[in-house]
Image 1 (cartoon, one colour):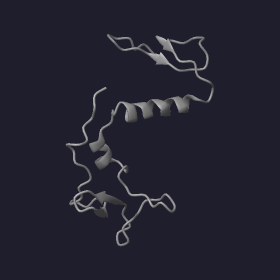
Image 2 (cartoon, helix red, strand yellow; image 1 turned 60 degrees about the horizontal axis):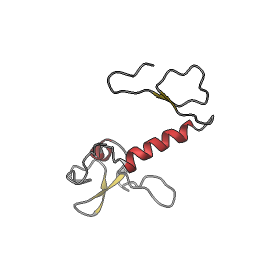
Image 3 (spheres, rainbow, N blue to C red; image 1 turned 45 degrees about the vertical axis):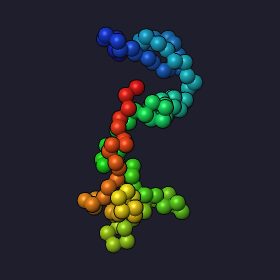
Image 4 (tube, helix red, strand yellow; image 1 turned 90 degrees about the vertical axis):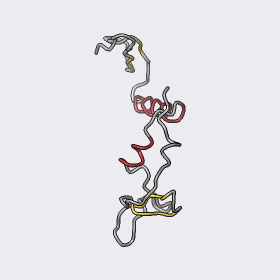
Length: 113
């Protein structure tokens, strides 16, 4: 893979150095590539704040409420649809209710690195 176009750099993370095509090599132990990936994601989200909160709130199941007893989604008793927390009314509502206020978009802006 050739990624050096302008300021792009290709970094490979594989256990062996032989046959590596890249500008930098991160030596990792066999089977630890998942931990490396999760560490990178953790750094991007928590240290650098690089994420799209509005997308996560409206296009994913991220805001669904979870029951502490078994870790499953909290659901509406009538419709059996997942619940989210409404910030305006300060109560749970069905996720696709048009009156739900999930996030104040002025507070959640994607930060640049």
